[in-house]
Image (tube, rainbow, N blue to C red; front, side):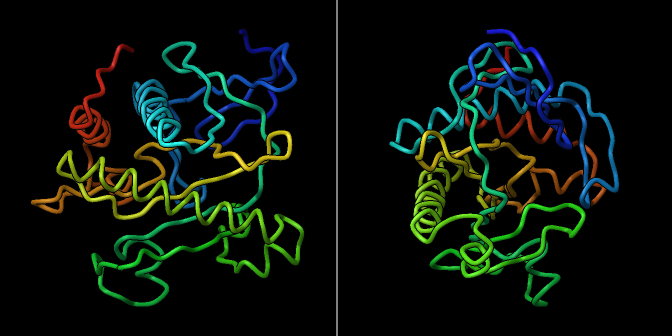
Length: 238
């Protein structure tokens, strides 16, 4: 299936219409951004790496019974996905303290949470993705109470699946964000899962293996992404 008209261009991905009104072509670009798009750079092969990484993770999640929008990888940088009516809310699961949580609450980075924390943020770069409650989501009509419950349950289920997977690879899944949408009335996991949208630390050394290498100017961003993929058994064919 071929991409036609551009529907949406985000910070690192573009979505294109196809001949099927229920399907989109999602293109992963080499663009890399931080701080709500204030810093943007190009990293060679990032689009291809994230596309294949995402395909691997989405298929693993699907195998555990969680519905996703992913259908197939079309090329090095393109995937075929279901066209969702996206809910403008980011679901964040935190197994350890990091990032904005540390800045907001002044807690020590790395503090473990058992059970994991679940947070909601409005997806709005202009407002810097403010934290919101389930009551906000329902009051503003972004999702119903039942849909919120489904997103919450699915997020925690994804956490269980992926925490185990990354632990087997010698990595700690510190936190991650998920986005959901509606497909013919059903809640479905959308967007992507890659080192761009999660934090991964080496279980022995604590070394960061995710997008924080870009945010914090640590260097070796793509080397870290490739290393994580290799530990998971992903063989890049891009």
